[in-house]
Length: 536
Image (tube, rainbow, N blue to C red; front, top):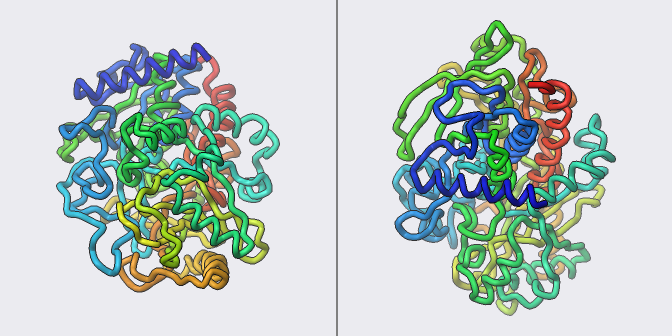
């Protein structure tokens, strides 16, 4: 523990120093030094699977470089905040957008949610693919910078169904506990929850669900819950209680830059290059890889395009990023041996958002914590399994709205193709494919509304629909484990090429997926280091 604490301290110090000095490269050692154009291992991305991989490579003494297309978020801007407020966003909010694109498009059918902003390398991206949009975190830490911190381990039987070739016993004995420990997962004090003004909205939803005979559950979190209590007491600056969620969280969230990435840097063997996008992969005759890397400034201006060389390449750019890199390489002939399974098995984790209108005598509160920890668990429903997160609507005034992000069991899968005209991956997903998710969510919330005498809100999504299925926070698949890769993420058709992120999971986990991605990466990289990199 002392060694771990020292590593984390060294890593966080390096992150802070790099940001203060305006550096795009972060390291505490010399093994993968700034300015070099080669390293034994490269990890593309800094999200959950990538962060795990970098830490374990660094621990093994392997000089490792990470490329992250987003910026480093470690020092405050002129207003004293790293991240902008959700209700008064600026360019820090979104990735090179002229206007914010929040999941709620309206309130009372009025455009009261989004704001015009200056294009900048902001922390949240919304990537549009026809009938489906995907929300992504941009920055050192990836999705951990923008998620709701809900650290859910899936039911064992559900995990075994999703990934049948993975030893579930080993995962639940070793890798899930390892992941939750390093992520800093903690649990709420039920007595404090019961008395907190910030969770009135969740208690209203709990009462409505229980009246319908439904089970609710507290969800573990990677938000520092001791910090949250001190927020409510007024002892520390507010973050979750200041409406911070979509566009970053300034204090209490244990994002990866405070956990795995800090520990990785602390090994002295890992360097992170921020605002560096890998655009192409090419093999060399000796089995190594050459990467084309574009460096930009925070305003999107290209600083340089360079080549970087590595023996072992780990793809952790997320479901969209990893899939696009592999598809581009296969379809342009750079990596012709890649499987036809690349681009397949993609899903939304069954995401559906829905709002309900409560009675006037059931106010949801003007103060709402943005780090939710309560879910309605109807996953054992034999017809329409649903896990519904109770999420906040922290607009600073009473709305009487209960809002939910439902995770459903949707068997529909999309796929990607390569568009040579735009040199990008194109997602093929239709609105009809979301219907199983909508039916499941409707079955659950019809039941709640019927028993409580409440109704749906039809004014939240920019039109009159009650169920919003046109976006996902949980993109999964594209390079599925055991199909596009072997059983440990080695990409079929090319040696020393690995997938380490949510691309490995075929479309669904039944819960928030980041703990599953983290644990799976722990399992896979342990085997890869032992078998492929021993002695490197």
